[in-house]
Length: 274
Length: 274
Picture: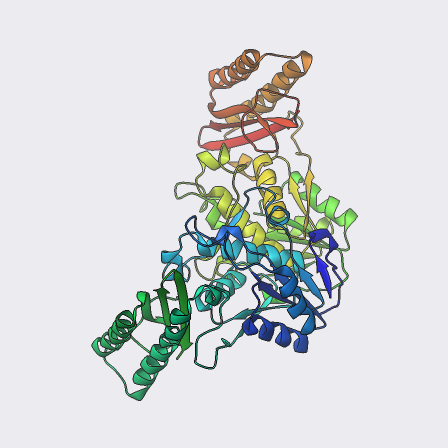
């Protein structure tokens, strides 16, 4: 595996089927699963490792975000990655520059809680697509709204990249893998799986019979209350349609249940497709 | 020459050196010169003909903008264009979508006079680059600030396209060719060349000796007064540095004189590099 820090050092082989896995490092089995899928499907696998400052708010955890390039490089090498592209901030942003803004799917939820977050995500992913020029880019569904934002950007801007969305990888007890899980205290770690339990329970309820709007409201509220009672500060627990990422009370279109909750100092998000 | 209206009908031949000339139609010798240059330099020449609604303000001339596809197609064919890509609005914008925002170079002058104009330009050019995937794209320096915005976008977003900026083509009397010149009355057409005369005179003055800031101010003001006295409503007549497109009073960096003025119902722009 080659570690590359300069854009100019990346190969641009015409005719090679390139797979890109964009990451911010802190590799866990979720990242490694994306890399393994890319490895199985493509000729050349590029993993980008870049903690993107423009997607963090001023009061967020950009500085303390888990960084361990050597450990990440060893893990990537083990699953057969060809190139680890790990640029410095100045290589990606030599100065404040052009930004990409995705409407509709980026306005609510993470977009509302983290102003500017999705413009930062869309901009850096647009740049990485232009830099690496993959045939396919792999993203984890754990960050569902991010997946919707990137898919929408690719469609809107006619970007010649196929976006492959891969299932969330979970701990045995259901907690979605996340680089931020390392922030959890032992006690918080025990509570963590309750988010997915509530998502699963709520999904079962919604699938058990055709519910009225009021009944769906009540089901979402009950899940929220159970999380709050356990010690979470719930940001949202909602039913959304995938096309717009806006709330819905109809399950006739593709939908998902999404949740974000603060546990101590750590913000956890998760979702389940319906 | 093939006329294509659907994105899916465009070829994507690997290994062919594609040149793209993005246009809004109303072809004059400025457009044809860009096509001839592309023809001389590249294997496959694609001209896009798309009057882009998102770069027009609500009170601007989107509806009455000169449109004559058959005439344009005949002219393009004559200079050896391979593909005329002339999509309908719905093919490019199936719905309101993702936008691209270029900072610094787009804030003043045309950006200030025409809010949203450069976001519209950047977005459609980004899309056309992704749709056609040219090696080189050709633009006329007549729209200098547009050239700076596109160059900056390409650099900021790492777009793998080379931007080739070509000299402004002029009438014998100096009037810069523009699709909007057809709006001019006979009397206005006679007055038109005064913009370029003032740009040229001002350039000569700036080159004749090293002027103080106040003397440059005065030279710009004099040109503005001469245009106003002749019947123009001058929007701006300025010295800018090319790196930022902001005003400067130093000519030690690459600079240009830029002008925009209304003549009757027609807004004319022009510039001269120093």
